[in-house]
Length: 227
Image (cartoon, rainbow, N blue to C red; front, side, top):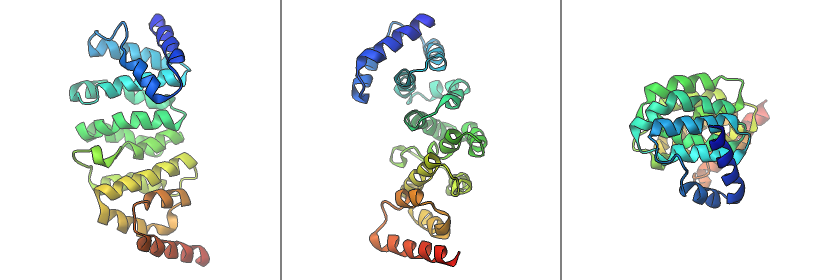
């Protein structure tokens, strides 16, 4: 395992700094790439847990993404990869694994949502961010959505969260929610207009018409004056 870790860290250090170059290096394969999925996952898990290198962590996430269309592989990996979130300290890895978690939600929401609910109230900001970003990781790529109420029940508690990256997550999730449930999203945003941070407001209404955005601005302005 240690040798695998050193090898991957060496590859990532030489591959280049851009994501396309890193992905190209990953796609060339490794000495253990022909092992069965479980054995490969064990290796990548060891690498992920024991590396301090950001790009090596991303290689571990590329491995999951490579197998993302295999429902059985993904669901069987959940007890291991749910713990990977505990190590995340930056938005790049948080959002990369959100792609995997989002697919898992689509495969079996009942398995994943209890963990999301725990993360939603966690003191760890990356847990809170993941609890909503991983719900609709790109609505356009989802074959079906969670019920609207299930989504907003996790978004609403974070509307007043003071953390920048959580607010970025709120805004992004509201934007994606608008693609899945446009009418319901609009009503929710207007209802909670005074609670939205400037970050969440900007991202969450990005696709709105100028007229609707101006109307929402007036409501937000009135709420500020009334305080």
